Image (cartoon, rainbow, N blue to C red; front, top):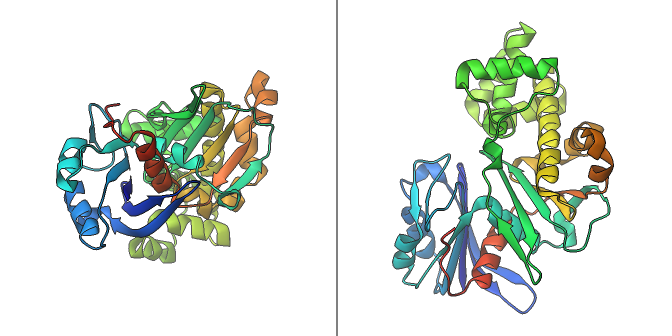
Length: 331
């Protein structure tokens, strides 16, 4: 029985996964709010103590770079040490990989109904596969064919410098630069990034925030409230914010496709994409993705798809544990 985990800045998904000849089956899972715990070990204890399965292997996708089996999470104040977790579970070793590596491996385990294509393209056999995912942060990664199997590459590409494409985005860069100094793509393409976009467009509009929207922000997730108002057409600033979010998301998806030459396809994961899948199917996203000058023709041949299965990273973590039964991750 594999203990698999998808650790995020907002929530943590844990599952017991049983491998069979062709599939991975989840035998028990739980979602925890990150803010309710002071360490990853506390989350593990809460989950393992709740279900009657004996763990024989474990692997976790974590938000941040893993160095010598240890990660200091990017959007959390946690340090996760694979050796400490292995000792807690009573097993020889634990796989600790970047969260986008886990999502990338999850792509290999997806069924047709778990994927919605935005662009069918013409994938090349064994071509590199790119993965991008906006949630609490912006993750990026890739799968590279080794000659016998795909291996996932770790990346912190979401933290690269934001590149404005027009006068309005230059203004946006200045607006965010005055607050943050340096502006990365994650400052725009993430849950907090959507709120940053909203603040920019609200300031730019010169119109006060409507009281009902202020109440919605205070009552729950501001990013979700922005998306809801945009889709309902009840606030023009929210609509502008979501449109720009979709456009920048598309642009960076195309950027990553060029960086890794993703002839095997680009896959969009994370918690935000399934909620706005219809928006990603509009010309706004794909035009931004493919409008790369002399490389437009190449981009149009690259498949682009949204991952609809929110357990992709869990399956990917379990897949990694099966690939590396006797080796701790030291990447």
